[in-house]
Amino acid sequence: MKKTLSLALALTMALSLAACGNSSSSSSSANSSGSSSQSNSSASTSTAAESDLAAVQEKGTLVVGITNFEPMDYQDENGEWIGFDADMAKEFADYLGVDVEFSEITWDYKVMELEAGNIDAVWNGMTLTDEVTSAMATSEPYCLNAQVLVVPADRAADYEALTSLEGMTVAVESGSAGEDAAEALGATTVPVQAQSNTLMEVAAGTSDAAVIDLLMAGAMIGEGTSYENLTYTANLNELQGLESEEYGVGFRQGSDLVDAFNTFWSEKVADGTVLEVATTYGLQESVILE
Image 1 (cartoon, helix red, strand yellow):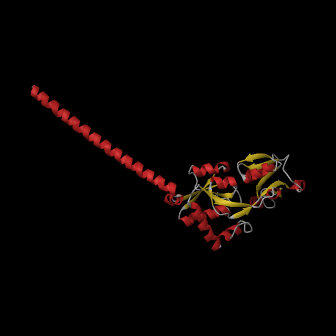
Image 2 (tube, one colour; image 1 turned 90 degrees about the horizontal axis):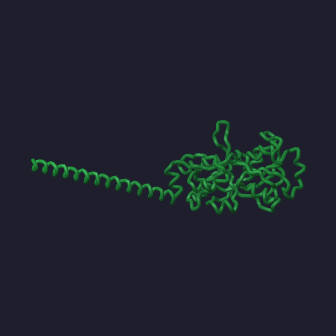
């Protein structure tokens, strides 16, 4: 009986050890597989980090950060994003062999959106200020612009001889070149989320004036627009003794999308596409074709 019991115990221990061995082997295999998966994932991330162009082509989508800024980026009656920048972004995506996706961002957070990987480019009539060029990799300039003061048309004469904006409450897009210009000229600024919102402030009488881009003013105020009772007067660049501003497209620091964009743009200038799209939106005098 004892021999039988001893044999049974020995057999049980042997089976137990065998089971433990298989479990350990299986666990080791899983860990090895997991490690390999992590290694592949890490390699993929590294490749994407080294090449934004490769990452965009791999995911099949170019995500472009914009705001509602007519005539550069705005929505038609069907909710589709159109405008000079939007149309050219579609062309660029096609050039890269991918789709385009527009992401409406808060302008103040454009650099953070880029660095977080939420967007691949900022393409929204962006003025190439020192702040912008130090925080992003930027394209060659593609358009000229200036900051102008928008006021009620029936008060335009009051602002003809302006040399400063002291004593005025001026609506500006937060984080924009217009905000910088207004503050430099002594205005009390009212920051809002988008340039289009600054016009609402003036129309409602909650701000004396607004500072927006000349290109936007030409498209959004005056006869035939939603703001027929508004007009623009002073060119703030001239008041500050500054040259016209230049627009550029922003990418992450070190991004190889910059070279891809510059090559694309040169080709589209040469084949007439840039001038054709610019003319559609009345920008033929502002777009840079050299």
